[in-house]
Amino acid sequence: MNFHYPNGRRYTPPANSAKKLTPEKKWTYSNRGMTLEEDINETNEFYLEHGIATIHKKPTPVQIVQVDYPKRSAAVIKEAYFKQASTTDYNGVYKGRYIDFEAKETQNTTSFPLKNFHEHQVKHMEKVLAQQGICFVLLRFSATEEVFLFEAHYLLSYWERMKAGGRKSITKGEIEMHGHHIPLGFQPRIDYIKIIDYLYTLK
Image (cartoon, rainbow, N blue to C red; front, side):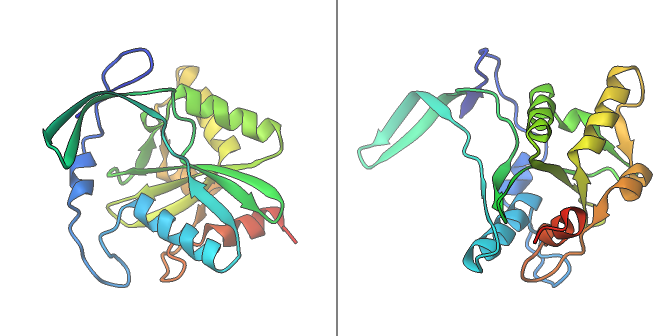
């Protein structure tokens, strides 16, 4: 199926998107073969069910322009357009505070490429911070199963460094220095609320 951005440019899925359709399941405590998105969605369900926080993945508005009907009981979408550029992946509320965050992962082991982010996402984060919202990114190093909460204002500073001609990635050392490692658990899987409590001392 073909997707297009609002400007008509064809959307090309990430190189590892095919793997996500048929992930290799490794059912162990430390690595269940789940994607970052699956882990976060499971975590958010835990928060919701236990009355901790209400956080959801943002739906992506899509306009369908071509549909085939191979049989009367089935429809196959052949072409569609994103109605607007996406902002960040998740938002919601926790103890009266607005939360907005993006989730990204990389196969790199020593740095996180800034090309994983888009200009409109960075501008959105700037606006959330301007309104005193809690904004961050969850970064996952897939090879080592490490997840970090990285506050948006640090991301913005490294983004500006790149625009000024500096390096096009954030080193893992910089992420370890400014970010917060989240050990993988069972329930919840990625307990980022614990880090938010630590950072903002929410009562």
